Length: 142
Length: 394
Image 1 (tube, rainbow over the protein chains, first blue to last red):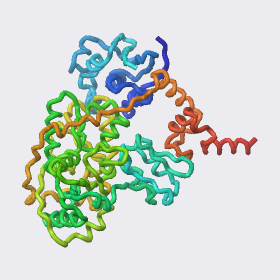
Image 2 (spheres, each protein chain N blue to C red; image 1 turned 180 degrees about the horizontal axis):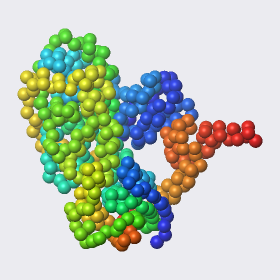
Image 3 (cartoon, helix red, strand yellow; image 1 turned 120 degrees about the vertical axis):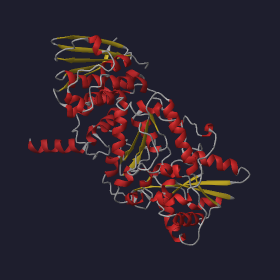
Image 4 (tube, chains in turn orange, blue; image 1 turned 45 degrees about the vertical axis):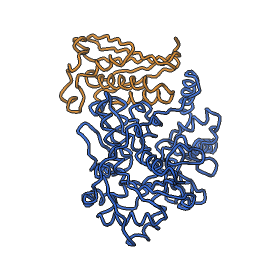
């Protein structure tokens, strides 16, 4: 499998005003290339949730998107945040550690990771005290 | 979409306002004239609203077309009825419309009400967030810019089309002409056209065009009227009957925001999105002449003539899958990705002012044209000016 498109993004710490900027750009790129609506919808949901997670729970971070020649889209979300204490709990629908500030803005319903897991074809999460790396893959028939 | 938006070169001063204001980048300037891409146009009327010289207008059929039929029926939109402030005014309006030369003038608010009810039933039964399909602008906008949501458009046809089909059945023994009075540009496109006969409506008339004649005929008589209240209310986002888990929004910018959020799955708590691209909903349609801020509560004065029940046409008559049709991109995935990369690389070489002076709406669209080989960097006026300056300095 060969990478046919690569893009790096940065999510700045506490930049709530730009929440969703990266996932909007990812969505725009996939639309321009002409992915099928079904896979675009899944990627839109997952990328938005993951980007917001970096903002709420970590201190921003880096996002990369790789598109492969068979139409697979791979997204990596790498943050230097505090890490997830209990990944199993974090994957439980409704469970949340979001701050009051984040909840007041409508985030932190505890559906983020469960939703991401539901819509992605491959899901890998590595977390420690140095941060969290979430790797997602989406297959599309092109 | 067969386009109802027409360009007149004589009136155009080439200010590019229309090109810059188009939400789907359907307009560009080629040589000395504006060209409208029919596939991209969604009939929203932004170009018409932004033009200060009447270079771009909405065109419907001419009333002359009445002569082509033995028997003619005119359907009156609920939005126009909402502009009547009393039962008497509605009766006079219907008479004045009939005087245009029609054999019958018909209210379709009973079909509209039933259409709305069927939409609600489908949305409530489904397990997704659905989008009401009553407005052609919304349906085309989604097909154009929000393909992710296309399958959530409810498969229910336009009320005027459903009503027209019933009229044609009822009058099948006659050479009948069905006319639809339209309050907006988008509805003008829903009618038979020389290259596209797939509609039941024969002719769409722009309300602004026939208004002078209607006005002259007002106060000359009355026609009996009877409306369905729930149907009339659907034209007005403030008065439409809806449930708590339906989202209602009006105004183009606002509905784009809603659709952006829906794509990210942020509106999953709603069952149905009822979106009016026009400000104040259909009663704010661009081809109406009244003041929609003042008219918004007129409906209370029409209650005495609202005794019609919703239509009992069978559900099959409402069903359509037309809104899910997509155009296929014939290029391979690799070709499409390469094109995207080439365009992005070309874009880096353009100034990025999105000034439209080259004729394209944005530098990105210009970059696409350059990659396609239709234009070259010399067509960019800013780059030329910068080069000239450089030469002067050296």
